[in-house]
Structure formats: C-alpha cells, structure tokens
Length: 289
Image 1 (tube, rainbow, N blue to C red):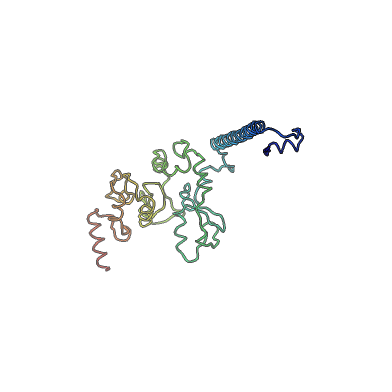
Image 2: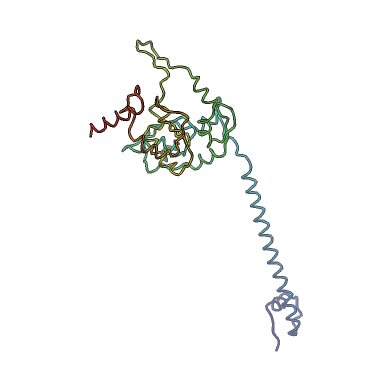
C-alpha cells in the first residue's frame, strides 16, 4: 500500500512530481524536509515580528525623550501666565475644566462656585452644570512638561512645581516685601493703613495653594495632605501678633482641628495676647450658645 502525504499531493498537482507512486521511505523523507521548511519559515516570521515590536518600542521611547515644543506665546506674555488660574492668578493646582465653555481653573478655586444652586463660570459668566466639571488631564500633562523661569531667582522650574518653589524662594519674598505701599485712589481724611498682615486668607504650607480662608485651609489640608508627615509652619498662627513664623508644628493637622475651628476675625481682639484672646473667644462662644 502506498501513502500519499499532503506535500506529495501538492507536488503531484503542480507538476513537481512524476506522479509515480513513491516509497514510504521517500515520502517520509520529503515530509520531514517540507515540515522543516515550514517550521523555519514560521520561526523567521516570529523573529521578524519580535524585531518589529522592539523597533516600535525604541521609536516610542525616543519620542517620549524628546522635549515638548513650547506653546506659542503672545507678545509680552510669559509661559507662567499662560498656565495661571484666572481666579488666584497663580499656576494651576489640580486644574479642572468646565465642559460647556472649556475654561480651566484650580480645583480649589472653583469649589465655591460649585456650592451654589445655579453656578456661573467665573470668567465668562455662563451657567454650567456642576456635574460636568472634569479634571483637566491635558493641562496637567503640560504642567509636568513645560519649564518657566521663577519670577524671583530666574531658575527654570517645572510649572507643576512652581507654586511650592515660589513659596520658599527668598528672591520672591524680598520682592513682595518691597512692594509699593497702599495709596488711596482719591484723597481721604482717614488714616492710611500700613504693615497690616493678611489675616483673611492663607497659603497652604504643604503645596502653596493660595487664597484659602481659615475653614477652607482646614478642609484643603484634611482632603489633600492627611498623610503628609512634614513639619510645617501654621500660616494662621504666624499671621497673629503672638505667632512665631519660624515654629514648625509636628502634627499640623491636629493643630488645625484643635486650634482653628473658629474664625479669629469674629472673636479675637488682636491688641491682646494669645491666652487672653482665646479666653475671650471661649466666653463669647459660650454666651451665644
């Protein structure tokens, strides 16, 4: 009996074989040879696919290493100002965008607008759906990619780190200390205030987020820095007449919750010392309850 393999059938029908019956041994040899050829071809395909995958990987890595092109700036515009929040005028911190008008703000800056029944965009005053405010991943990616010179020391800083750098830059602090004094727009008979510290809004000592009132500072730190182990200076205490601007609290969050639950502006007379102010605030709070 003669066995015909699929390879023999192929050769017989393409004229590559004489058509006579082949011995079992000859068929077996040819079958092994053809099988080897097919396996070699499959191996070449696997190697080629592997090489192409590696090539694509190298190309992608090279593209990632290439610096991102700087955005087009208008005359007199800085890169920092292009990525500044319209509310706090600082570089975006956790940027969010309103879907209806595409305007972008810091997440914390826009938060008060989300608390009202019918919110309006702070920039264009168009009504928007608070449920359609999303994290702006594209802006966050740009903040991590672009660098701009610090307005104080001129050192190039990645935009995402600009806030924290400015809060500790000595050159910026010197510039702020040398700002022109307040002058009224028109003449007035009232005394002009001078050297009055800002006790209404505060800067987060962890990330540099600005324009936070006392309650917003507590909420911000509890939501964003609950597990931060760093020792920081309490911005509320340092703004008080009795505060030590160099003292760092070992547990700032507990300090906030225990010492700053009420507003100093409501209960405190700044002309007295801390202990007397706390006693007066406690007495007034008890009398109102």
